[in-house]
Image 1 (cartoon, rainbow, N blue to C red):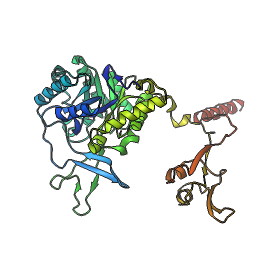
Image 2 (tube, helix red, strand yellow):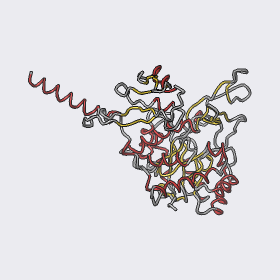
Image 3 (cartoon, rainbow, N blue to C red):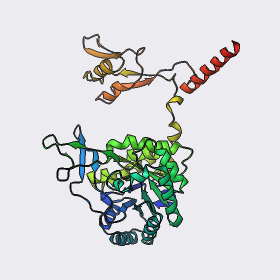
Length: 427
C-alpha cells in the first residue's frame, strides 16, 4: 500500500482528506464520527465572538438529474459558546491524537482580538490554525470574513498579528470573491503564513421561487446572498490553486478546497499543487463514509502508478500550466468518428454545424446507412463534438503532425517585432 500520510507546513496527517470548516465540523460528536469513518483531519467550524444564525439556511442547484450540483448557504460561524467548542476540541484530540484538528478563527481586525483567541485555542491542543478571511456573507457585513480577505493589506496585517503569538502553523483561508487571488495569497505570505487554503465560498443567489417570488432560501420572505460551493465550483477553485502554485512569489503549501467529491478530484488538486484537500458539500450530501471510497481509490491509483507516497504527486502538473501566450500554435488535433461505435444521434453534427466550424458531414456508407465523417482539413480540433457525444469511444481527438516546429504567440510576436526593427533600421 502507498503511504497516504501528508505533511502540510509541518502539520502531519494520516491521509490528505480533511473536512473543511463548515456544518460537518460543528461539534466534537461530528468530528469524532468523521475520524472513526477515516477522515485524516478536520478544520473545526469557525470560532469567534458569539453570533445568532437564522433558520432556512441552505439552498441547492440540481442539474440534469444530479442532486446538489451546487450548494448555497447563509449560515455564519459557530453559534455555540467558544468555551464549549474548546472543551470538545481538547477531548477530541485526546481520543484521536494522531488525527489533525485545525481551529478556524474569525475576529475583528484588531491585534488584541487575534492574540486573545489564538492563545485560547492553542491551549486546547490544536495542530494548527486557519484564519477565515473568506466567508462572503453575514460576517463580511461586520467587517470580517471576505471584507478583510478582499484587502491584501488587511490579510497581511492580520496574518502578522497571529504569527506574533501563534505556536502552531498558520493557514490563511482565501476568498475567491476577488479579481486576482494571488494578490491576497502573496499578502498572506508576506504576513508570515505557513500555508494557504482555498477557496472559500463564492458570492451567490441560488434561485427564486416562481410561485412565491421568494429567494431560495428565504427567511420570512426576505433573502440574502450566500456562499456557493459543491461540484459546480471545482473548475474555478482548481484554477485558483494552480495560479497560486505556479506563482514564484507564493512559496508556501496549499490546502485545496472546492467541489471535491471523489478521489479523482483530490488527485487533480494535488497534481495542481495542493498538499492536501478539504471536503464539505460531498460529506453533507452523502455522509462521512464517502471517505472510505476516497481512501481506497487514492491508494489503488498510487499503487497502479507505482508511486510510494501521495506527497510525490504534489505539484507534478504545475509546470504544464502556463499562460495562453506560451501555447504551441502549430500543435494540431482533429476529430475522428468511429462509425462502428457511433449511434447516429447526430449531436456532434448539430453542435458543429450550429456553433462551431461546420466540418462534420452526413454521408451514406456502401450499404446505404447514414454515417458521419469529419473533414479533417477544416477541423480546428476544438473538442466540442467529443464533449457533446454521449457514447464513450465514438469520437477520438487525434494529434496530426504539422511538420512545423513549435511556435508560441509570444515567440511569434517577438519575431515580428525583431523583423519590424530590422526594416526600420534599413530605412
